[in-house]
Length: 149
Image 1 (cartoon, one colour):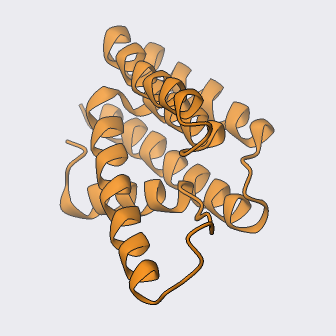
Image 2 (cartoon, rainbow, N blue to C red):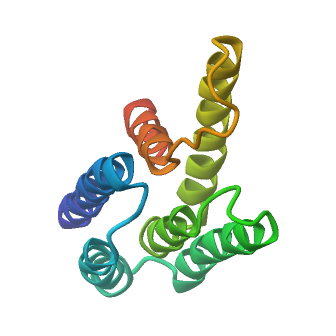
């Protein structure tokens, strides 16, 4: 049982590092890094599936949450970016549907609050704000509140 917890902590820590790197990249370039995404997904997915024996369906449904966001991105002409959806596909494959769904809705809530503040301050309505940092903040909120267990 102890080994399982350590491996799970490694996977969750790896996810935190990945999201921090992608957040910085998104803030600087308004893009995501596909190579970093692949470097994160492959070992983390394999760790979750084969070593920790995480339910495959849990991970696949997690990815479908990101695919749903990708469809929404297409329909809204990137109101939420394709890169944000791809990040959620990746985190879904690694963290599962429950954490991914909480991250998505918490991230949307946080970005809404910031958007309202920016509108009140009369910022440019055409201004775009990167979403990956909000996903990252949501993930750290989940970590700090013990919502991973």
